[in-house]
Length: 399
Ligand code: PLP
Image (cartoon, rainbow, N blue to C red; front, side, top):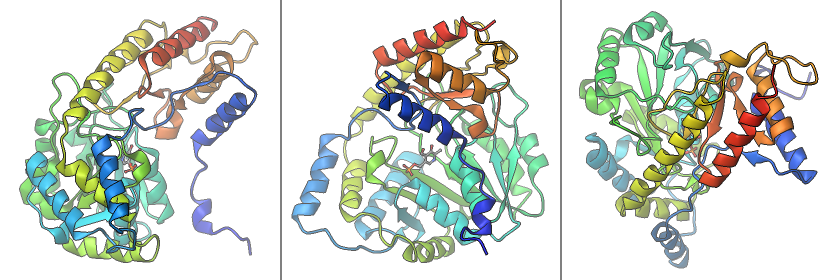
């Protein structure tokens, strides 16, 4: 009998691990690697949020709390959903966890039986597929035909089976930056009304990071009649530059929220107490800094898209939101490096630009759609400009 569970054997190894290891080894050798792989804002957490955590610590709020969040935070979350999203909810529909990732894990663990299906639009955030596989359910990948990487209502309808339990809808999305506006969500809701057994996780974690004329909308406010089938997931990590604080939350049907608390009670117990008080300050406090960050991200997005589109063989769509671009490298597949090696995949391309250009990015294979790669543009303008120059120089060596 082996030590490692069969369940874990189902989980494919992370395709990002190889590239991260390579980048770390190169840095250890003293090489100047620019890392554009991380999914977090480079801006610091605002001072008023840090102050709230310090005050909580001073006030002795340093003990275990209620398993799925303190009532004060649940109330602040209800105010946030009402104010920003037009979703009316009560505290018994709120669950708080150690990051949006744990909330998602709890929800999938609490609801899926082996063999249940979860529709995951492609390209997807790696954890959507990973968690579904870990709980022995079946990811059903929905690959959009459109070059914009946006699935249609008809494509969704075709992916639904009697075994479908969830659709995971992430807008704006990681890694594609694809946004589904109110009109798209209305069409999606129409399909869902015809399939009452399908529930939806609406992952809104990038809601504040949108660009140009894209206006954020969320399914539960576009289709309030479906609210008892929707889990609306959010968190403070991305909008409030609080990735390290580990606070995520959702509103969901009370029976599911209770089941999620049961899962959490047998794993991590309550989220960090001080971070919960800091999250209240974030949600109830001023948000003008978010607009400033968004403006900075918008300029970086333009810089990166323009630079990539100027390179022969790379095609970069303008994302609606988040802080990633997901360019196609279809035009580079089959080309040859000066050492004679052929670029046969996005993984080959990413290794080459790391080796020859010292820029670390993530290959599309990690997100279920090739040949693409993901760049996180949450880095300083000068760093991004240098990285784009390096990528252009390396691509120019391909024949
Ligand atoms: N959802 C998406 C699409 C993400 O990209 C992330 C983080 O990368 C999360 C959820 C979860 O973030 P956290 O666990 O930091 O709240």
